[in-house]
Length: 77
Image (cartoon, rainbow, N blue to C red):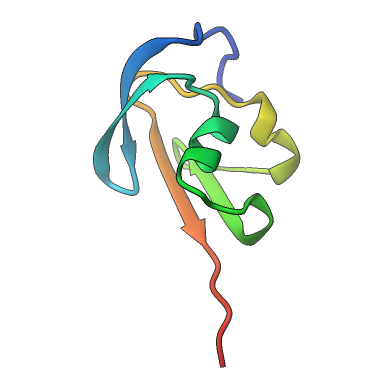
């Protein structure tokens, strides 16, 4: 599991779904999910090639160079 020691308020760049993405401020995964207006119950997250259980989202702090994949599930018919 990633370290939880990243200070809030630090500017970092991660890879989000394969593209560079800069986070300026709160680097918690839950904050990014909120910022992107995604619903945690309808998505999956993979950080540095490891699936993150939904129960652990609040514990994850992103760091410079992390590779994050966020997959949003969409229903239809």
